[in-house]
Length: 274
Image (cartoon, helix red, strand yellow):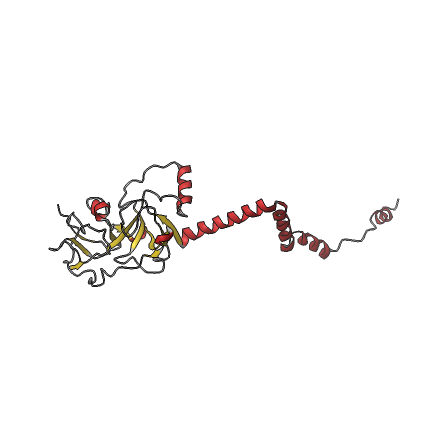
């Protein structure tokens, strides 16, 4: 039997062209076919599917924006009245200190108080924490209990003292006229004298009679000061309610304050009174 003849009779089809086969396979996964499939999927779901996709895209955009650029922050207490009121939504500029700038005296900042104002964060249900974090990132719920909003009064190296003969705060030996204070409030009813360590901030609320701030943590680790690295951002605008929309601006109260190192002797440290 002639096996060569039989084999040639069984396989009379031409050999496949390698290029054609490769092309047909790649065409199945081309960007055009993927786009057509996505379009068909979107049209197949009708208006509800398109609306859901649009809503998801908007939520992702808002979360990215609030995590890296601007975050709404719901004011939970009256410690910053009358500058900020309970229920205000301030827009926190997270890029304010990202490119070499540091907080200045007079800035209103939002910061994480863990390790300075709060030594142990309160326990929270993981699911509730996730819901709260998502809602607070768009200003719908109050922020974490460890987040605070205060005004920077002293930066690294400053000597902050309360008070002079007229009851005014002193920063590096210069009295400060704080026009932003809540009407009727004294700059402080608690006397203190502290030199702010480098890389940290001395912060106080504008409603001094209703604010737990650096003064209340003098005897704790950090001496009431907040690390610059814990600052989340600078509150630049009031975004809600509609009637209070405005820029927070920057006060001129500290314009005449001399540089750090003036008004105290070298090597001085925190000296709380009373």
